Image 1 (cartoon, rainbow, N blue to C red):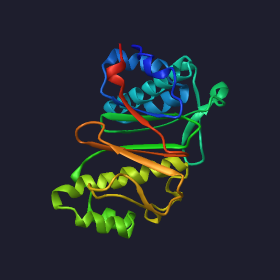
Image 2: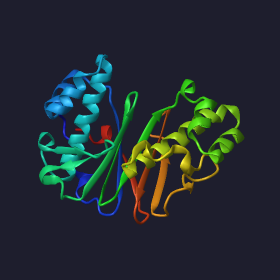
Image 3: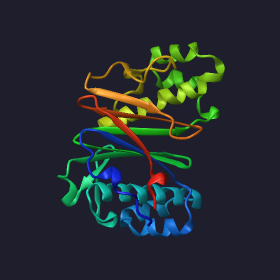
Image 4: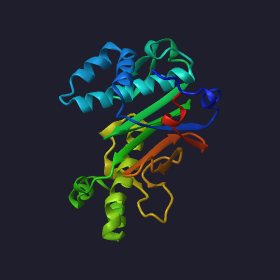
Amino acid sequence: MRQISSTEYERIGDDIHVWRAALDREENFLRQAQATLSLEEKARADRFHFANDRNRFVAARGLLRELLGRYLPQAPAALEFSYGQHGKPSLAGREASSGLCFNLSHSAGLAVYAIAKERNLGIDVEHVRAESAGDDIAQRYFSAREVSDLRMLPPEARVEGFFHCWTRKEAYLKATGMGLQIPLDSFSVSVLPAKPAQFLGGVEARWHMDAFHPAEGYVAAVVYDGPPCSIKYFSIDAHLK
């Protein structure tokens, strides 16, 4: 696999690094990425029915290993992962005590990764699609305040508003490691464009968030705990060489 510049990896400090990456890759890249995967990851890849979905999974996991390997530093193929009760991944084996934490998400042809030290992290990205943003879904899963705010938006802005809400809530569930054990309507996030990305109620004050557009047609959010910090955004493709 082509190497990623080590410039941004030397010191992560108290910052959070967020990376985005296109997942539609050439065959040579996919072959080298797959060679770094564990037997369990390869088995997961083989369970995809469609080749495009399988290739995107291989690219997402291969790039995760490449990124983490650069931060540690460690050979990507040597990294081991464990999974929490609700599926949240973390480093295992000899790197478990490194303090490096991460989270990832991918939708359609894009992946995003959050990496930090000694924090609980969650990240989510969604491809904005009108057919997946129905009012019935909002009423079923969102809080009453969020539904009300969405209805305040002009019709042409509601689809993106829906996905801003969804990604911010999903990123929080992933950061806690509890998944849907936390009801989606038990807390509220900001939806209106004039307001910054933030929690509006239902969570402890230690949780913070940021929202961003990783690519045209996508929205994303990252959630973390602990003291507020700087979040730096990077493109993996800009660092490949």
